Length: 134
Image (cartoon, rainbow, N blue to C red; front, side, top):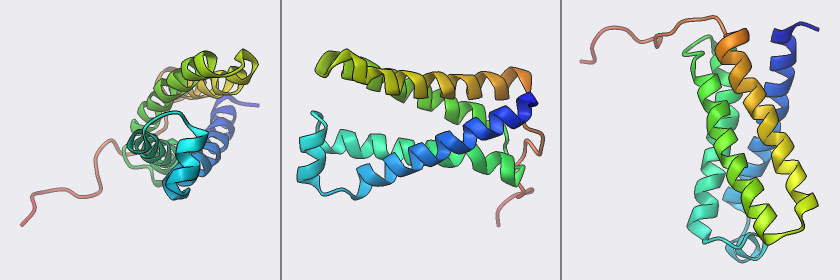
């Protein structure tokens, strides 16, 4: 299996996972959400927006061939979120439960590193819109 194919598989799996988690955090009723996560509601919703946008950033730049450098940035942002998830899980729950966010964070780090250094996505580094507005 080529590195590019392995990265695409990881990107798609991460995108599906973070899309599902982001939508859940944005649509779940507040009382269920605050009961599940010991953080303020607005913070959990913010994390949901970040996860949703990170999921889009994992696949859309590569598929559209527009601003492909956003993919490793999205992956790096998701690594930061997963570091926070791992640490908070270690502090608030059973340490064995922290294995899941740790593995997801390592997979996101693999994508960030792979798309930055090993197999960068090709495509336009500029937007499809050129010239000035107006």
